[in-house]
Structures are given as structure tokens and as C-alpha cells.
Length: 388
Image 1: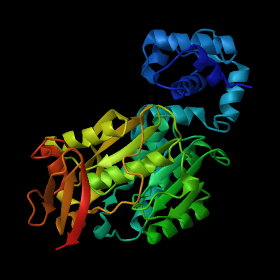
Image 2: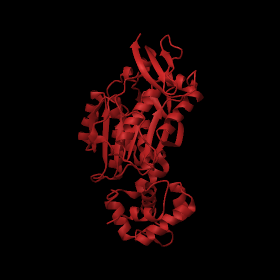
Image 3: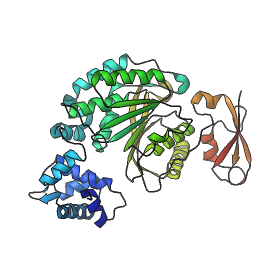
Image 4: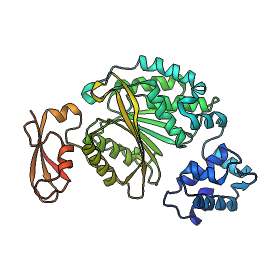
């Protein structure tokens, strides 16, 4: 039997994908009596499109028009059971979705616990570009997930997690469902650092959070069992173009093949030239930039980036595909990039360029910004690397 979402999708062809129908239903569940205009605003849809979806869901028996738009009993049961909102405190959900950390009264205890956990976390390893974000930053990231309706009942992946975003997600979920939490929610972490994995696992066991940890070097492809499993992912990669591409590629390979899935990318503020190259890479991977929030992330002792970083919220499209599929052999971390000499070959004309120590350019970002000196193409293969 087809779900309400599938029935509505068949009759309203949406470029945004089926996920926006799910979001619309959740808004009706959280806010009984919501107007069509407000539904359109909250789902970022044109009013006629929101009205068409509403009409199909009314026809299917999930919604009804009664002093605004409301879920039917059957619609409420579907959202609670199939979408995982059973047992969720909808008042707290609305408060946090609307106000974030400004609704601190709802999550004050979680933030206090998180502050203690952050104080006791392992020391960062700067050789792999780890840095300490603040507890408030970690919790703000989790709240972004909630505001996108990508937390409750979802499969979430943290691609690297020295910022304990998985713990923030778990504590937020626990606050929303004080009983036993959403049984459908799963939060997985992949990281190379076994210290952080052990620390997160211990917290998850002690606080009864639905977190699983996997040790992995992202230079290698993810295990096959993690492919195509997740509804969203978080990542705060090394602040090199290679790092961004690699971490995004591994995360994309783990996502379900659906349009409109969110990706929460934390990254340093860059110059306009490097930012342009970043956007080219995102387009090449078929990702849409939904929102850029400057100075969203705050770090302790990260003077090189001014203790602040941006949050880039991306959405998948039908063209989304990872840029890196095989094993990765290029320089990855900031320290590696600074002390290696690498030879790249232009994919268009075959011209060779020396990058890094004693090279024509310092980084692959600069090379991609400039393009090939012969043909101006901006795609290159690494053909040789050596330490200097």
C-alpha cells in the first residue's frame, strides 16, 4: 500500500522531491490549524504548490481543512508511527524549531551537561586539523537539524565528530522525547580518531543515546554497509579544498538517493577566489546551496581562522554524486599541503603543473582558481606527490 507521501507525489510533480511533502505534513502535525500561506512559507514553496500538495493530502485522507489545515486521525497516526514522532513533545519541538538557542529554557540542562562533556573531551590533534568548537556551537548545529525536520525518526551521519555533534543530537532528541526517545532515530559517527569514538560511545551508553561509532580513514571508501543509508549528514572537514571534497564525497555516498536531503557543512571563511572554487566544486557534485550563515561556528583557540567559521547548508538534487569514489592519495590536511610537492596534470590538455613547496602555486585551490595556463581548464589529476 502506498504512503500518503507517495500518493501526493504521484499527482504533484515536485522538483523539490518527496521530502518537502513530508515536511509539510509535519508542519500540520505540529501546528494544527496552520494556514496555507504559512505552510508555503515554512516549506519554502510557492503558495500554489503548497495548496496543490495540501489538496492531494486531503484527497488521500491525511489532512482536512477545518479552521486552517489539520491532520486527520489517520494522518496523525501516520506521522507519529511511520515518521517517528510518537512520544515527541510537540510544544517543545515548536519552541526549539522557531527560536533555536533563544529558547534556551527548554534545553538549559542539556547545554549544561554538554559543557561538562566538552570540558572532559580528548585533546585535539592539530595534525589532522581538529579544533575545539564550543558547546553552544555543537548544540546550534543540532538545532539546525531539528529545524529542517531532519532529526526525529531519521538516520543521521556525522562524518568526523571531534565536535560531539552526535552527542548534541542525542541530547536534543532525549529532551524532545523524555520517555524513551524516538525508536526510529539513528545517529552514526565515522572518525579516524579512536579516542573520540571511545569517548562518544561511553557517553552514549551512559546517557542512553542512539549513537553508533565506526572507525574509518576517509581516504578509503566507506564500508559498503554504510552506503545509501542516511537522511542527512554533518561534517567539519579539514579546511582545504581536498578536505572539503573528500568529506563531502564520503557523506554523499552514505546518503539515500533522494532530492532535498540536507547536508550541514562547517568550513572556514575563505577569500572570494577560493569561495568561488568551492562553489564550483559543489555544483560539480550536484549540490545546491540553501543557506550560508557567516560566523555560525565558534572555536576555542583557533586564531588562524579568527575563532569563527561559516555554516553552509546544502541540499541534494537528482544530479548529486560524489566527486571522489576511489581511494584518495592527495595531500589532505593543512600541514600536508604546506610541506609536500605535488605534480598535477590538466584533464583537458595534459599540461603539468608543480604545486606546493617550490611550486608555481601553493595549493590546489589556487590552481583551480587560476585554471590551466595552457587551456584554462580547471580539472586536474594528481600524478606525483613527494614530501619536502
